[in-house]
Image 1 (cartoon, each protein chain N blue to C red):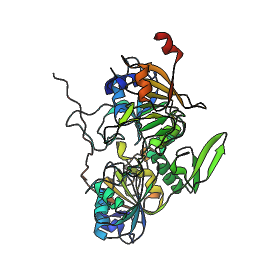
Image 2 (tube, rainbow over the protein chains, first blue to last red):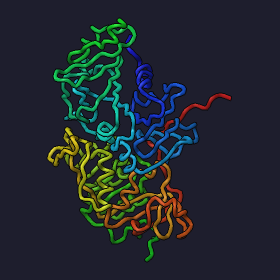
Image 3 (cartoon, each protein chain N blue to C red):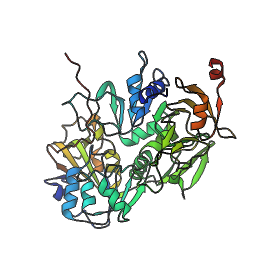
Length: 224
Length: 235
């Protein structure tokens, strides 16, 4: 059984360490906040100008002046601070944020990331994604292992070289998909290392769903 | 020198012209100078270049000036929430310059601080860096981005005093402080206007030197784009 969105988010939450400052993207990455382990204290950054992001408000307590980067209403915590967009991105671009977890359209084995633009389609913009992947200390991608196009044909998203316009070059440290956990090796040949498999998923399934070569991590080989 | 004006129209009087560049604060619909935007619609100036992180939504914020076709070009990082925008852009009626959000914030900050250009890692190896100077510093590759300025800045603040000192509220601060610094003329709408001396000088976010005119807009309508809540635990 492949992992559900929630299981992927739970796996991504294991990348958080006590004391981390973390930026979570929209979609599955947002769910990571629900899986932070007891005893791990992290501060969530919202790039529109807030550190210490709290949960969604109770109904009737929404405040139009208190939103996250997805424009959703949120709340404050005792640790909260507010600042301008310039200060927010100084934090991001200056390497002060420990971890960025975001979604992707394509990840290449050299660590390249594409997640903002499909040529020929209406482009909404990169928002803060290019700044995050260029500036944050470690970038973790959480996404479905493959994409399905309009005809239902399956397109691999872990590939040798990105076909879509890049968001960042050689920036991805780890990829968590519904099939497992993978590391772009960034070597001469385009290879992803398989670090973990989702429960019941086989290496053959991963190989078939991946657009380039894979190698099995020694740790995983021992387990199997 | 009197900065306080009695209406948004008066605050913008003599400062609007066709083809000008306007900087607008706000992130999504949070902290946008809605009343000043409405006054720009009434003034009817056209061919505007607007520098703003987003482009409003249909019928709200900068979406108002898109509907009236007063905007010729947007410089933004994300414009996903606006159908009018998509329609005009795909028809070739609207020009668009995408800038990464942090680069946009820094370009405006730099413009306001007299810094004509700076180097950043953001966008290196992407189409954002096409045609721009690339340089290595200490073994890292950087792209040069230019400082950005405008003719007019429109800003929304929570509190202001008669000197033009400003305090923003929560995440409604966002791009407003930078916009206030980077235009030849800055007009601010404030929810609460007090006499100079009533705000804590240590708590001022934008000093009055950046503010040319200020208008009091009591109880502005603030819209929420994505109303998200959690259930109350049953007692």
